[in-house]
Length: 358
Image (tube, rainbow, N blue to C red; front, side, top):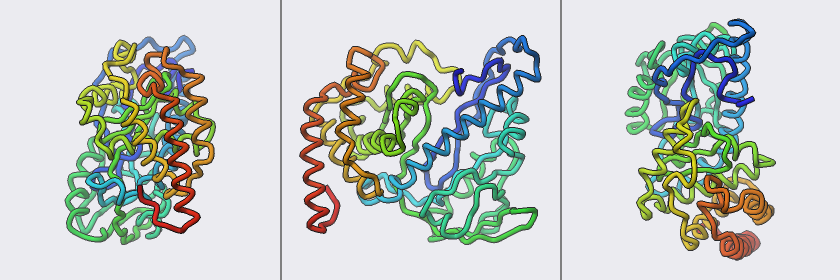
């Protein structure tokens, strides 16, 4: 089964952003434009609705995994992300209208969402986590301002929360928990301001456009552990930090691919071949590998198996697979040699108890 294209579905939805890191941390996707309706499943509307709910639950599971792995990378590397660092509240939130209006009922039944924005993930070690914010809390007020609900609530809430994060060190949230209103004083968290999201395609690849990172569903299925998933996320965070998409004038092309992959029915024609992306020059790729290793260690991930992972990826998804990772990052031998040098450099700094900065 295609995990995000729901079997028998008569409706469609836009994949929610994973860690939308603007001035605050909320999932902030627009609603997907209506598409042509597919035929109702032969098993009937009830079976189609059940399949839709199963697909939504699976999507939520994938979101939680991506958020869990991304969070420490964002939090531990604010100083390395340079101009991309932002003040975040440290949580994600959705309501049933985070999906298309036609899927609202299924989102409510499958995920327990309603009209109010509900906390769906709290970043470990963030200000929100330290303040005691919990998954399932429904947002009511922010510093005395009512949090919007209903359709377009995410965007409207962003218009309220965004300016607040720029002008203070913490924000007072009023939330509904177990039918009781509570006040939670949430300190803002300095973190890398990259939006990391799931792309709806089965090719094994990831994309960075200077501000965003998207991993395809195929890449998420390819990695064997959260550690390997972190290797991929950190690499694209490093590309963004170093401004490689801008240097190669690929921001628009990569951004177009990322936008396309956020749809539940992406345009497959845009995913054939290289998608217009030029191969990454080996020096830039190696520089991103080096910075990524520092980011990983600072976030608590082991880098002992990084060489083996990138070698396995190159072996199983060779450059002849034009929409695969190696086709866009072809200098495997050079990369791995430089990666080994960077690994030795980091180990030496750890042994000497030196600051972990490149």
